[in-house]
Length: 116
Image (cartoon, rainbow, N blue to C red; front, top):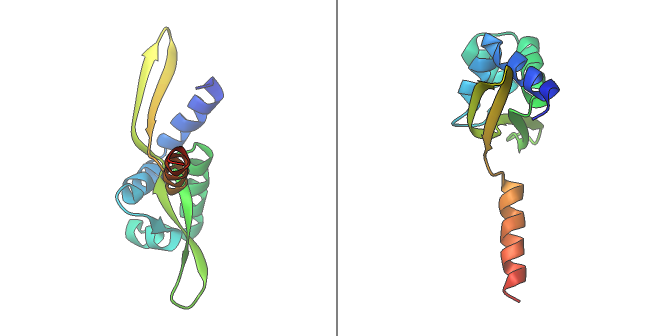
């Protein structure tokens, strides 16, 4: 991982509110409004931290539809585990990514293609 990406990731993880958001969306996707309520934070603060986490590729957004037909985004983590270590004076970050629905669809499509 390039050093700029490592710095961006460590900066995002260095923020307590961002870590709270990561913990909150690990098990179940949540909207910014749900996060603001559960974390007792302002909506603008939640959106700023989500933007930082998205830039660091630690969360992704999924579009959901409310019962009234309005669309909104729910956020979830993009990784299973993350480790940071120091080697030769540099930070090394290892991220084990989660497989998203698009990846599973691509895999299924490939498997179907192999069966022809």
